[in-house]
Image 1 (cartoon, rainbow, N blue to C red):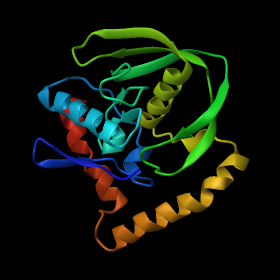
Image 2: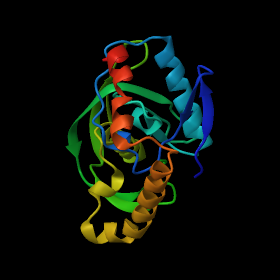
Image 3: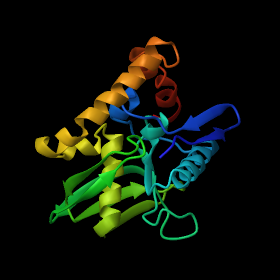
Image 4: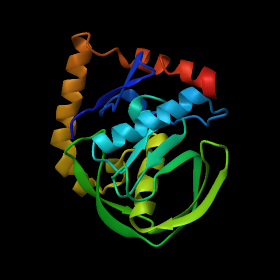
Length: 205
């Protein structure tokens, strides 16, 4: 999947960051307020998700360290169930199931991941209404994958060591490309990238 770009507030380009961008390893902070800018961000996240043919996208995948993600298991803007979950919490996992997963921040990489078959999710929508429901099947997997993101966890972290070895070469290639761009000045150093997140904390946390 190629990186997609849209304009956010016409001044800040929003894009899906790729591994090993350090924001992907940040444990995101809870959101204390919702304003129009955050609603606009969510709309752009959904648009990016559909453009990239994804079924979920977490805020830190667009370099925003807030506890928020969007999802639609159909992957189509006019089909399925579109979800916006703010400050989600997952509880009561039941059963186990192994299935293939991929990630928009790790294009072209896939692996078998074992997760609970069902979980209870508690969250808020953009209007501040509470969401309380038990989800299972593919939607449960999508929600768990995205919830991992806002905790700084990537899908290959949950793979067995043996299975992950199949991804090691590609992960190393992505790391090399990223560090080369940093060395060339095209991407800020990790410390600066992390420092830049403070503005989000100041505004929403």
